[in-house]
Image (cartoon, rainbow over all chains, first blue to last red; front, top):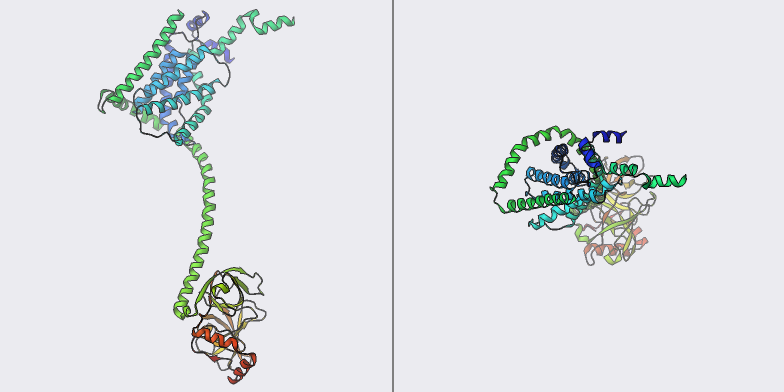
Length: 220
Length: 319
């Protein structure tokens, strides 16, 4: 039933494009998706700044933004992931009066990497968002730290810093699945393609090439 | 078509990365009043009311999450504080013991000042063992003959006399308390100077009885009993004069020789630090002690008869 609902929410034009055999993620940025990603990004950034950042968990704050960017890339492709990463990073840098470009650069790479993972590997495992979330959180924290060090921030690489990074990654990984569910729910209606749907569709349409159909014929 | 898509994707990535680097370099290089900083301040001016509104609107959510976080934090903090409490409790116990020792030493110091106890070469000692049996009023202290402690040396605390040394080894000594049946002390009523003998009260461990008081003597409950500084056949020990022993609680008028009940001033069940008066060799007190020790029982008896029942012969010099 959920699958049917999802199919029904895909725009007809997108469905036609998917059906044409276009490579995953190759679609240029569709308008409705851009709007959804933009609204979601703004909301998540403000929620992050207003609420989540002020609630310490085990001494660190949960950071939803790298998860958002990575999942946007994972759902929408590398181009949309990179653009969303750049915009979210810029918004954070502007709002928090940070050095412009630091978060943008990090998040652009994270979003692009998320998209490329989908385009190249198309992971279907249920725990994929968990690993993607962990990797995104690690990349964000390490990348941000490296850039800050390169810029000459006078802070020692201490055990405390490493502890914060490790605990931060663990905490972000824990919330990765709920964030994935939220992002997916918000964007699914405007997605040009969905990896799971595409995989199932492929299995249904390959006929005799499907392992299932093959076993059935052997049984006969 | 595919190449075009790939080129476009790479171009977008390169553009965004280059843009980020340009922003980063420009922002980092410019002064605080530069254009990018101005843009940032302008953006913040526009966004801050929204952010403020979001802050207020989401405050209950923040508080809710904060409550969960605080609860988790409180649990770990609770365990940590319990550890600290255990540690502090141990310290408090040690401090209380130290405080009690200090108070006892302070009282000893005052007693020393009032009665010139220092003439008797007091040796401070700690009680290492106390008989739990109420019928055997004996304690063991951590100073012995190596510290100059000898048998019959009086032992005092800040409150007053508590007993005398009955056994000595190099590094320890056994003290029989004044409530022990083997100890007798010649004493006097502080108010009248009437001399008598303080002994443990039979059947009432922890209580003292002052006997052999002249029947004409006027004694009232509440009077203090102190050492008389004398020696006799019944109480051969040579306690310095004026050390408090106890307080009269009741008077028995029935017997020919008046006797009074005495409650010891020192808390004999809670002894920690005591002083042994060792009599410095060569002092007047030591000489008197030696004389008392050298008297044979018959000599002591005759000297007692000469005193016509008044048990005592005043030494007059604190001995």
